[in-house]
Amino acid sequence: MEKTTGMQIQGALTDRLAGSFDTRTGDVQLHGGCQVEQAGRILAWTGRPRFDAGTPEAFLAGLPDSDWNPDALLAHIHGPFALVLAEPARRRCLLAVDRLGIQPLAWREAAGCLRFASDLDGLFPADGPRPELDPQGVFDYVYFHMIPAPRTIYRDTHKLEPASCLVFDAQRMRQRRYWRLAYAETRPERAAAEARLRSLLETAVAAQLEDRPTGTFLSGGLDSTAVSGMFARLHPGPVPAFTVGFEAEGYDETPWARAAAAHFGLKLRVRYVTPEDVLEALPQVAAAQDEPFGNASALAAYFCARSARESGIEILLAGDGGDELFAGNTRYLKQLRLAHYERLPAVLRDRLLTPLARLDTPLHRLPLVRKAVSYVRQASLPMPERMESYNLLLRAGITQVFTPEFLAEVELDEPLRLLEAAYRGDESFSLLKHMLALDLKITLADNDLRKVSRMCRLAGVEVRYPMLDEELVGFSATLPSPWLIERGELRAFYRRALADFLPRATLEKSKHGFGLPFGVWSAEHPGLAQRVDAALERLARRGWIRADYLADLRRRHTREHAAYYGVMVWVLTLLETWLAHHGY
Image (cartoon, rainbow, N blue to C red; front, side, top):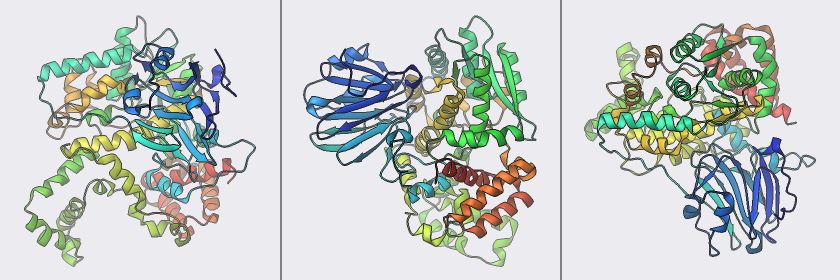
C-alpha cells in the first residue's frame, strides 16, 4: 500500500488525527489516526466506525467517480468516528464526524490550505506563533461554561457539529448536516416497547465488549446502573465498577453505587476525592482540554477513570446520553409547567397578565404575588430563551460581569442563536422533543461527552457509550412524549421498562451525576482558596471581567452561598488556569 506524504501511524496516537489538504494541488498530509489508501483515495479516521461495505477498503472501492453526495456516502458509516476522505487527483476532500458528536474534529482554512485535527492544538505548528483568541469564544464560554460547536476559543477556527461534514470540491467549500434524528410520536403497544428497550440496551452493551479488561462508571443513577447491570448479565465473572465519593454533605453518591453493586454482584472500587486531590489535579485537568472547559464534574470523571486505569482497566463503559434520550433533566418539568401559560387566551396574556407582571409595585413584593409574577415573566418568554432564566451570567447581568471594552468585541445574542439552531426542528415536534434535541447537542455533545472522553484520555482509558447506540437512539426518538414524563415523573417509560431489572434504590434516586463540591471546598480549604484568589486576580488584569464583579463574586461565595456562587468561581478559575497554561 502506498503511504500518503507525511503519514505516521503510531499506536499511541490512533485516537488523534491531524493533517492538511492543499486545495490548490490536492496534496494530503496526515498524522496519527488509522488510515487506508486505495485506488487514489485516502481514508483516515479516529473512533470505531462500522462500514456497511464491511471494511474501509471495500467502502473506498465502492465510492462513485462522480460528485460525492455526502448524505448518501455517510449513510453507510455508523458508530463513533471522525474521518477525513480525500481524493488528491480530483482535489476533493471531505471531513465528517459521527451522528452524535462522540468523536471531535476541528478545522481552519487559510491561504488555500485546509487544516484539520482531533484537537485544536493540532491545527497550529508547535513552534509557530500563538493562535489569536476569539473574544466571542471567551464570552460563549462564560455563558455556557464551555464553547459549543461550531465556535472555538480561537479566531477563524471551527469545530464540526454532530452529524455534520465539510466538503471541499470543485474549488468550493461547503458545510452541511448529513443526518437528523427522526423524532416522531408513534403509538406502539406499551409492553412490546418496554421489551424492545430492554433488548436494545442489552445489545448495545454487548456490542461494546471485547477481550480487553473492561469496567464501568457507576454513580448509582439510572444509566450507569443499567449499563453495569447489562454488562454483569453478559459477563461470567464480577464486573469491575468504579465510582468516586466525597466527604461533603449532599455530594456523596456512594450509597447508591454500593446498592447497585450489591444488586448485580459488581466488584466496586470507591475512590474518595479530597480537596488536596482537587488542588493537585486542577492544573492538569485544565491543561488537558484544548480550549477552556468549565464543567466541574470533569475532575470526578478523571479520578474515577484514573482509579480504573490503576486497576488495569483499558475500557470503561459510561452511561451518558440517557437523560437526553428518555427525558431525565429536571428543567423539562419546569418548562412543561410554564407551557400551561400559553393555553390561556392570547388577549388575557398579552393585554393583562404579561403587562401587569412587568410592573414593580409594593403589591408585587408579597410572597404569593411575587411567585405568580415570576411565573408569568418566565412563561412569557419564547423558547428556548425561556430555558435560560437561571443562567448564571444572565442573572448576574452581562454588563455587570464584563467590561465595556470587552463587550464591544462580541455579539451578545450569539449564545441564543446557538440555542435556537439546536432547538428548532420540525414544527410538529412536541415541546419535550424540541428540548431533547437541544440537549442532545448542547448538554451531551458539547459538554458531557467532551468531559468524559477527555478525562478518560488523560487517565489513559478508552471510554465507550452504549446508550448512544444508533438503534437505541432511534428507538427513543419515536416514543410518545407523554410516556417519557408521566404525572410529573421524569424518565417514566425508562423506569417502568427496567423496574424488574434495576434495584429499588436506583429507581427512586434523584438525578445527581458525580457533582464536585468545589464551591464548598474552595470557600474553606486554604490551598484551594489561595489558588482561586490568585487566578481571579490575574483574570481581572486582563480587562475582560470587571474587577468589582470578581471581588463581589468572591465575597458572596465565601459569605453567602458557597455552592451557588462556587459554580462561577470554578468557571472563571478554570478559564484563567487554561489561559496561563497556554501562554496567554
